[in-house]
Length: 166
Image (cartoon, rainbow, N blue to C red; front, side, top):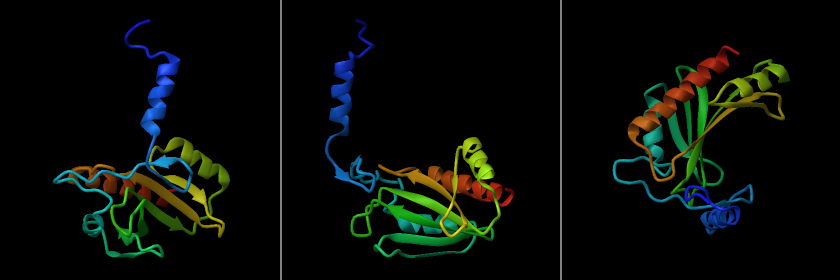
């Protein structure tokens, strides 16, 4: 057997070892706590950096959700959205974020399915109240550069512009 190919049993053992430990999230899957960000990097525990970037494109206000986790309400050039923080411990040390926008738009289920099939960023669904909800998840485990986070905001802004054109 080639040294580049793992035997099926060896691969299975490797995967089991790699998935062990950590706490359980909503899905029941094992989640690991995110390591702290290296110096100069931004992670989801730094809500202020998110708020600062949001202000570059419109108004933003930072607060807390019902669980005590950070929550940012903002707008991208007049298009309202929120940033939800996930996997937080006591309102800090969050693992990732979700950008969320809700719109009162009449769009059929076929258009929603087409959007999700043809767009890499931003997933669209209909809420029980009939409104559309766009979501874009961003994981920041270990931290990202300020430039990377700014690029995430730019991607979200493009998603919002595309949503408005739907």
